[in-house]
Length: 296
Ligand SMILES: Nc1ncnc2c1ncn2[C@@H]1O[C@H](COP(=O)(O)OP(=O)(O)OP(=O)(O)O)[C@@H](O)[C@H]1O
Ligand SMILES: Cc1ncc(COP(=O)(O)O)c(N)n1
Image (cartoon, rainbow, N blue to C red):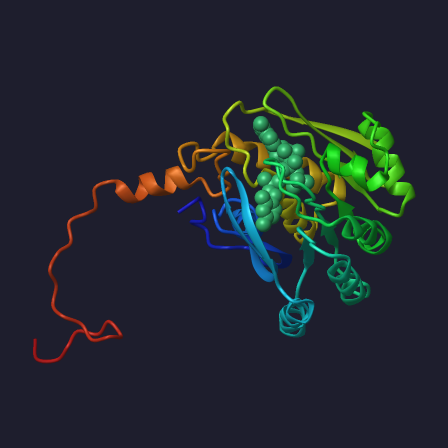
């Protein structure tokens, strides 16, 4: 399946994603696992919260105690050779500080997606968590991936409309590279400052209401592509294209609000399985190892 007839040539990279569960399965940890799997990466996870959520918005949330978050991260890092780390929703300053302390000495790329407000308007960061993010996590990240409103909040420039100036300000605050995502029904344009130059990446816009999880997928894809050895510029360019394709294929019809993106091409997979099967021929019974049972 999927053109792998010649056999695999590369081992999957391992990415640790630290974020919250989305009960509707489109964004958060569930979205990250699918986006990472779509580019051949194994996702390990550390849950920091559980949201009761659907395509219309977040109904409620429960946060995981900080020591329990730390225990998940320690368990993963003690055993798995992790190639890159992503952080998403971070609810409190206490959690941000603890993560920063744990991740400071990690020798692999860290991608930080400061998901502060969902498209439906639900707050996913407290005010002090925003400040802690800027002071403690932003300087550790290889890339941060805010959207425009989040970039304004982080840079404390509520009236700034120019993404290039916002990228520069966030770099001045200590970010190694900044992507400001600009998803939209008419234009999709992401801006990158990689520490040296400004770039602009345009992707094909989709008018379908299927962007739930687009931002999560985009930052998870960057994480996986960095783990696979792409440069920041390559990773951001490819992640933008792949996320836009995922929106284009989005699962309109699942949920009555903003439907989930589809990174795994589920319709094609569902279709392949619903084609008529080859007839199953009765054969002689076998034991559990597939050997033909004696005396039959
Ligand atoms: N309508 C669309 N058509 C095509 N691609 C889109 C569309 N909306 C979003 N995308 C893709 O998803 C990526 C992230 O989108 P967007 O800017 O909407 O993120 P976000 O959800 O606001 O981010 P965050 O996770 O930081 O809150 C974009 O870079 C683009 O690749
Ligand atoms: C648990 C959780 N994490 C992140 C998002 C942001 O989703 P999007 O990718 O649509 O911005 C979300 N809605 N829920």
